[in-house]
Image 1 (cartoon, rainbow, N blue to C red):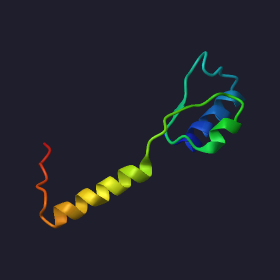
Image 2 (cartoon, one colour; image 1 turned 90 degrees about the horizontal axis):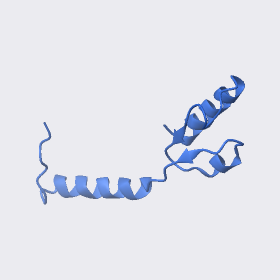
Image 3 (cartoon, rainbow, N blue to C red; image 1 turned 120 degrees about the vertical axis):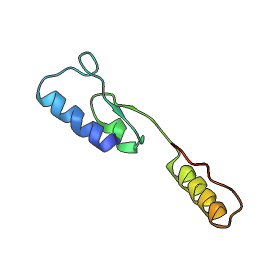
Image 4 (cartoon, one colour; image 1 turned 90 degrees about the vertical axis):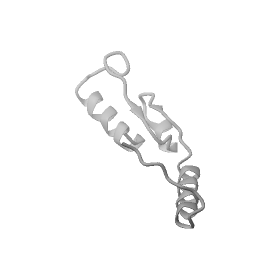
Amino acid sequence: MSDIVAIGILYELRKKNIEVPKTVSVVGFDNIRESILISSRLTTVDHPALMKGEMAAKLMFEYLENKIEMKKKR
């Protein structure tokens, strides 16, 4: 999930005295700056969301202009 959700999970685990990462591991998925501010270390994945969005938009415009043929997924 997102880092915000992961931070909320860490907060609830701490309230229940569940040790992180000894008992359970939590991973976020957007590497926000705020993730460094929490006391428990959060493993987070950084992904280039803007670049992926730009690439998706470019592919969609090429598809709409019939420059490429989309493959059907089954």
